[in-house]
Image (cartoon, rainbow, N blue to C red):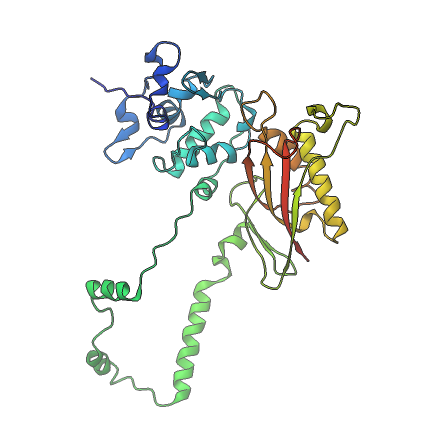
Length: 359
């Protein structure tokens, strides 16, 4: 008999067993995927997005992605505008958020990308998948490399054996290859350096070859994410002698003076608030002799609109791309986006901080 199992997300995400606390027949929460298709002794093996969705996600978000309410609220993934850009679901799948557990330790980069592609294209969404393996890798928590103390390094060397050849043997081997003069030594060293230079070659620089790296006259290097056109930088390298300008958090401007104080209409929706916030940032930068192309770092704080399940990431992106990655202003910053419970004014849905480099 082929064993069946509950969605891992339902089991590990909420230990009280929320899937069975939801309304309906409990059988609907049992994965229809045979174990052999998704799992073996080494872990989850499938790279089919739909199979992985049925295994990990359907137990809470439902097979059709319609979501559910029971012991907890499980948002709908079907027809969800927040899934238009892959960065958002990838981050949640890898790192979790709130009641949703992180699945990054259970899934490979290929599997995370397969689930993301499936929910972007399927479940009534119809978005063009824009995720990349590099984007998944960048979403994973940074792990500090192990640093060994000197005595630990010595112990490892002893265990592996002395890598240096026997000195007497080396001396015997060189007996017939004496160097007659310092000039010959210099020539030998020069030849070696030349060989190394030839071996490296200009074509070995992957960033330059792929066009993902640009450097301006001041030495600022901007790294785009390879294989992705998502409008943020993967990284930015700032020269040591550069001047950084930190702008305090900027908030939305009033778009409807006639609207009642404290009403959502006074500042507009997330897109409108993003556009007025970025316009205000542009004005502040201009007063300092800078422009949006000088921005290298951005932190964004978004509040869910009233009655919504979560932040309006799509609305934010629609406002953001009016100011970055355009023909008039092609530069991009590094960026983080956070959903927060609230801001100083209950009507604000957006607050943005930026760091710029003075050219």
